[in-house]
Length: 328
Ligand code: SF4
Image: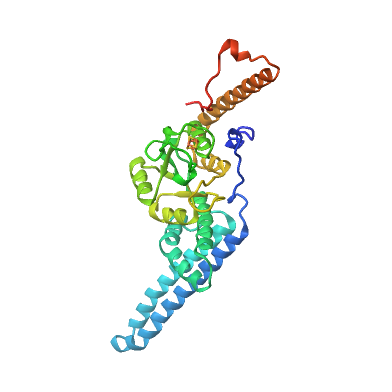
């Protein structure tokens, strides 16, 4: 896809927003926090394992002279696994490339390290939100390094319902096509992206509905938009499915009229969608942009004529639809 074609879909929507999280140009702070926490957690685990060895060592010699060494070898292997995971994760984060079975490392991070890191962070007075933010960044990097490309119908874009305008009277939870695409909230732009890229798109009102949607659509890859808390728990829930998180923006506080950088969503799709479907999307996007330009030109001409006192559509009666519709 050329640079021109890769232009953000924020162009499709006059309500352009700036990204909170740019995973391509990562803020080093979340990385440092994550590295600090994972090293601390690993050292604590290793120290605990060493303690487990020392104590029985004194008693095990009485059972068999070699028993302490067998037990030591067992615990040493556990320590090696922990250090291997820690080392692999840190290398992955620093170099942006997968090392030492990235998939298994992500599993260890999701299932074991994150809960322990959260406890450690609490001891040091670091907020859960910062830990989750850091976790999402690192998870995204691991997913980027381990995941391949998927057909559009195997990708699920999962959205939180707080993206919908609180003043909108249409119910989208069961059918996103109820949206009239008025442009008052980011749903319009996201539906445009859906029309162009052709992946699944669903809106979830909570974790249970999100899980149901995942079971129903059976995706191979999930692109999720949510806050730190929902993204972190969602990534844990759907593991081992690769889930890439895009943080929403909350200018009105949590869960109310939130926003999402459309360019981040589109960039993630371009990274994880297979080339064949990306080519189709490219063609659809060109048609979409051409039709949009045509609509804008018609509107401008109509406005100009109205200002000059002659409405060209008064005679032709051509355009009456107030809402912009994306091509199907
Ligand atoms: S774009 Fe308009 S119609 Fe669609 S959900 Fe948002 S406010 Fe409602």
